[in-house]
Image (cartoon, rainbow, N blue to C red; front, side):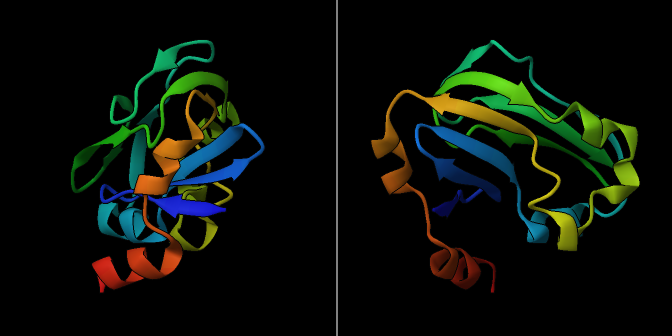
Length: 120
């Protein structure tokens, strides 16, 4: 179940753990990514907390957690090749996995159709 935030993050829930990344639209808007700061595994975050930073040749952008919980894994491998972070590889370029406190938080997020309508 993929859900989206108004800030262009996505979360894909599998059981009580969600994989989080940013949307193809957001990657396209940022342009060439030159720096990524990821959160630390083991840290606890609340929904809406700024947890990561993407910097591109155009701008710096905070990435917000779409849910509260414990960050259980981060995608360190993506830091080895920032040029691989492209719109068509957005779901492969996930940022972190979070074990959620409250799955009801995701009910407030948009499904794919609502997200596509928002960015249209």
